[in-house]
Image (cartoon, rainbow, N blue to C red; front, side, top):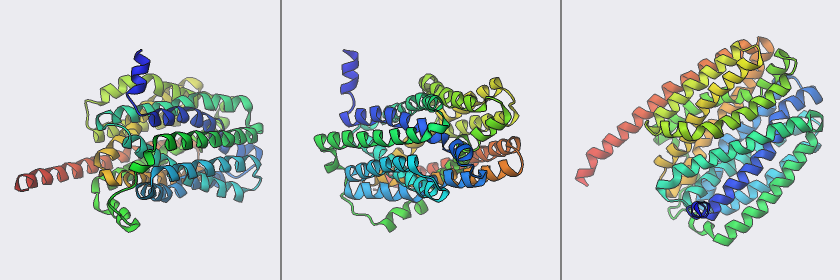
Length: 407
């Protein structure tokens, strides 16, 4: 009975997106995290080129997410999400048959655009169909769903093996096609798309203006870019660093990815309750500190135990930072521009482009130790920008409070 009551507490679309996220992310995590190893060991691509290939996806998504979020406000969530998912499936099929660096580069660019269209639109849709007081719980559930998929995917990917990565890419593509059909049926059945287009017609120029006008959002984006520069190393340079540092480094990499996801699932509830004592900005600042300690730990690690401990520390930072970003954006976004604000948050993805390219260069020219020490310092610098964002937010609140009695 309790399960039925909990199911009824949230819109069926929310549950569709949550369950779909578990399986879709599980399929993508079975393949995509091993792209760097696949390119280096099977295709013998240079580390700098690998960094560029990995990084082009987030770079294309930096602008793509903003455009997708705005289009979902203007034309509705349905058409943006369904189109993105279908093309996404084609991209993974393309990964399975690609042979040249240029094709991998193009496919991952499209991969980034599809992700950046789908992610902010799906988050905005979840907020659309959820009462305001329940949105924090929904975003936390979504984050848990992501990590449930991430816990199983890497282990399956390691089992299949790097040499058979083309089969994992193809399987992921076909699953995304299936997910597209399910979403299409559910969104059409509940007709949620009719409520999403904005009644206030905003142009793309108006949408771009929000980043210039909203200082808190602007500093939040800068801080997020710095965090993502560090976090991007997990999928780009970390597998290469482990394969060179330890004999069974590839196996350890699979274990670390799954451990990261499992730790999120186990620790999220107690740490989220602890985080409720602080404002959202302060929570992100605390998380950045743990992130930095985790990367410094990677720099100093030389065996399984130290790498595992460092990943747990980094995971604690992840739990504090990532769910808070959705809550922060939802709090400052006007109802009619929710998709645009979630899309603007995708500007943080610039860090996922800068990070792999920068990391690949430092890793190839110097060492993994220097790389992760530097990443720790970069992530730590995000705290400064989160503090600036918190200050700007308070400033706006004070101005609004002083003006309200005169209205």
